[in-house]
Image 1 (cartoon, helix red, strand yellow):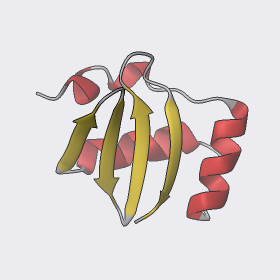
Image 2 (image 1 turned 180 degrees about the vertical axis):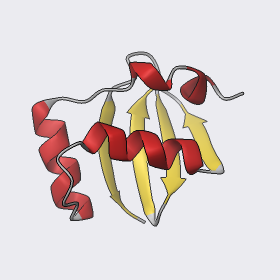
Image 3 (image 1 turned 120 degrees about the horizontal axis):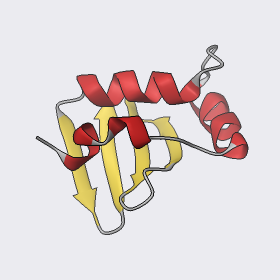
Image 4 (image 1 turned 90 degrees about the horizontal axis):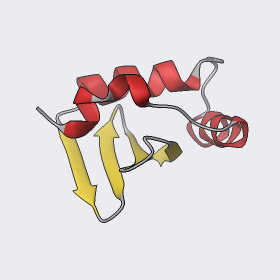
Length: 77
C-alpha cells in the first residue's frame, strides 16, 4: 500500500493553500482537504518525485509534501 494512502488521515493544508486549490480547480466545496482525500483514495496514479507526491485524479494533479503530508497545491491536468 502506498505511504500516502496509509497516512491519509495526516493530510492537511493551510488556509491559503485551500483558497489556492479552490480557485485553481474551481471547486464549490468548502472542505478542500476532504475533496483531496477522496480523489487521492480513488486515484490509480500516485507518483513520488523528490519531496512531493503527485496524485493524478479527476482531471487534476494534487501535490502533497512527502514529509509533512501538507497539500501544497492542486491544478487541472
